[in-house]
Image (cartoon, rainbow, N blue to C red; front, side, top):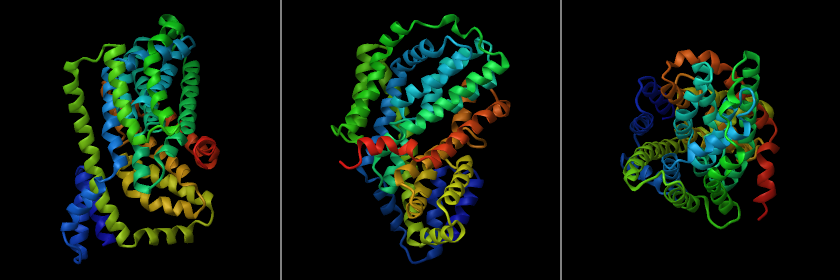
Length: 427
């Protein structure tokens, strides 16, 4: 059955079949080849895969992110970031990175961050003399912070699929998010200095005081969400409902950019995005059940132990595997299929499951900006109205920078685990 599952899944991916359909069809083929399992198992396992309380956080966080995008939060965060770093050469590009870090803490989605921030800052960078491919590369790579800095939908999926604390994963994502964001900010400042770009970025820099005051309601959203989780007031799932309520209050009450007539469009976008993710989750639940039942995880674990003697070699091999997988498979599907297999092996090598979760997510986030299926790459190109091939040369510097940060995150666990050890463990 393992051969049938792997072969059929690879063929369906190569044929361009949608991810959820490919995983589901591969599972059905595996059941038919095995011959001893009833097809009723398909509906049963797909339903069971969605019957999880933590998964309720996904549609609610998506809704909260859409409400925030429509409610004027992105514009206020852009102005705040420009007021902080916009006065230096390359400050506009640095503002893009900083804004994505701020917006990531309220949206949880890299694609939402790309469209919400890119629609404002890519044209602004082009007006200030930045080459359009560079502006799109800055936006695409910065937007991946949406899946690192909490709240993060991929971290929720990893937690659900491996039975790891979502609260600890959220807390552990802060260090890697700041590291990747800081590395990208340093890169854009260096590139601008070397290439002589962005000398006039400070011309329309807003004053810090008014910008901070205008953005204060937006900045309270992550404070309420994450503060409530880490103080034990509510769970991450309950926090998603609080995020929706807070987004409505900020968008309709403080900024008044969100109106009742906007809600049907916001809800429609949320339903479409949620349906796509949930279909992948249900199909992956069936696939994971069949893989586990076949004994493949034990075989893979034995192979890893035979081939890689040290933890360092194991983590390097996993990083290379996930980098390749991230180029071809959608992030949610990759997490749901591979995390339940790889996480127990990592624990056997002495890797903390929370730390391993961030390694997985950072790897797959890198896949979001690499061809041929990088979703952030295509989203940034759509905003900039550029063909993908035009930004590839510029993008290489950003990919190498994120990869270097990934290596630091992989082999320096303290970057990920120190806030978890200080605030949550031992309670």
